[in-house]
Length: 64
Image 1 (cartoon, rainbow, N blue to C red):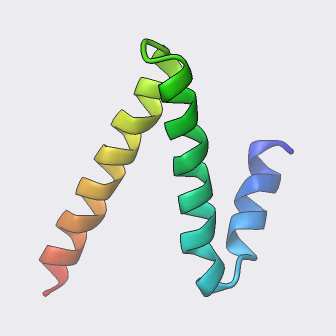
Image 2 (image 1 turned 90 degrees about the vertical axis):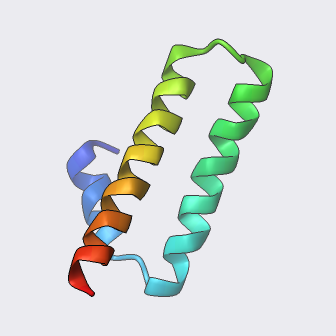
């Protein structure tokens, strides 16, 4: 799948499926990290995940 197809597939997800997809993605990279602790792509994934969580958290605080 290309990024456009993935974007569309994400938009088509049922709301209750979103946590399952995020959990699966996290566990895939967590396993990869345990197999290759110095893998740059894996470290970058977790860095970007942390940034996304911070940004969403900041947006949610600003809405209150």
